[in-house]
Length: 213
Length: 213
Image (tube, rainbow over all chains, first blue to last red; front, side, top):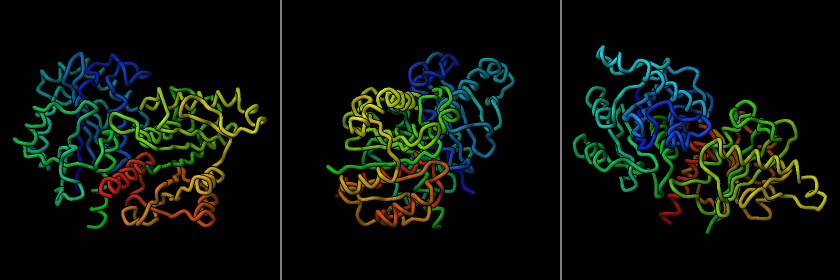
């Protein structure tokens, strides 16, 4: 079965467990946005999707970068609401504070938070490079000026969609991913959508093709 | 300019301000789901959409029904995060407790909560009937077995999409809206999506047609 991955670049997302679950937008650096994307990426109406990976690449203060990976096939005890997703992000950042350095000394990159949730000190370019080179993902950057997603001929068996938050990805990152890693620029529609809306539309397009093919 | 309306039927959504903003899923009767739908209905990446109305029809305990209307053109001080949307729903229910009875005695149906947010003691059938008969909305019921949304020929100038929460609409309501009010059954895709995902896909489809038309 094919795998879908989403990589969300969060420019301001907190990189230590210093934020309040009562204030994900402010103290979390728009962690509400990150949480909504996790939910749109992983969930159907009553179940988790199969074979979806979601990576939140956090680049806010105080200790960037951090990437938290959510893997739909093994995850447990995750609810759909922003507060619950935010609490797992906070737990992941707490875990990193306790165990990150030791794991790095042992040469381990990812620290397990719970089944299906992992954290690493990793930025977006190395992450996307690995997804392409080691896991054979076909890369797509969501971009208002990209090719219409409905016109994309082939998403490949494993497809990875890279998107920015409300601020967007740094130009340097976007250029590297497109020019060096060969990511295709695609657009989901004629308006500037919420990142979570983009994820819903991407899933819908590929679901339709999987169902008819 | 054409108007889009969304009517979300929430079977368990709390109908008095008795829930905690720290527990929208539990004490709020899946108010997290309602809040996510509000956000997907009203927002683009940096702005509120124009000409969108969202109605949350709450039918949970202790005092159903209540309908809260959000109108994108006049709303202020609403953020995208679930907690903030939930807090406005709670404020609306508080306002009803203070002023609902008096308003009804004066023959007024809707009580203003703030610019662009109103509450009424109204259930889904009368609401949808009014939208059709008084405001000339073309009605669509989102349904897994409906016609593919991409095949719908004409959404009309003013279109209204009616959808259920995770439990779904009562069969009686669905039948009435389809058989008596002439709503078309449409599907957004081959899988059972989150209500918020459905809203994102509906907007995207109509945005595309508006952009190309």
